[in-house]
Image (cartoon, rainbow, N blue to C red):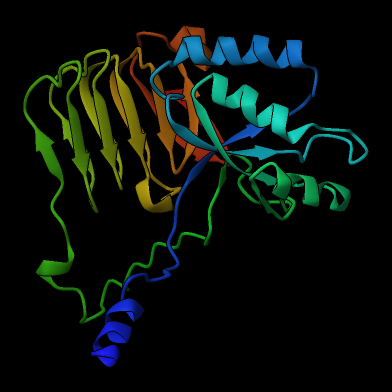
Length: 248
């Protein structure tokens, strides 16, 4: 009987490595008034995005001698709907206080790394060579095609493939794809391309009026788009860790 209990207990929990893309709150100041002003602005731009969103606090742009009250900072972010998980780029002197505030800490950002997302592992997209005999019909997922408008409150997901919407995407609708996203219509909702860390993914639309776009975790909201492209046909892609919006 004891042996059976021990066997059961040994299977009660498993530890696994996994990959998660997290939103980073990059601090350029510790002034509470300035932080509140910026947080209000960001939340107003995309209120649903920040609700119950896990975030990492990045200190890479701050002087290492800057004094930070991590408990107060955590409370401030929670006040605006975010859930702080960890701190990145902290000075050695701050690490104990970070732990005491209930947060983990990551190493400082290295040059050349994506400064908009933090991942437990570096995502890799392995593609077999064109003449590789291991390529089979089962290993290639067909593009997901939706031949109608995606309405507010609806979510369309394409795992392991591109996503094509033949129609408009209403405000409040959401698209997610591991590959590219094509919208043959008015884009007013939210689009996330390049899931699983695919930085080569792109977003294409006939009329850009999106609330929020993201590629491999790097995101932007509507007021950051070039005004001359608002309402125009456009493509969005990553270059040197930044989102680029260009006309088609």
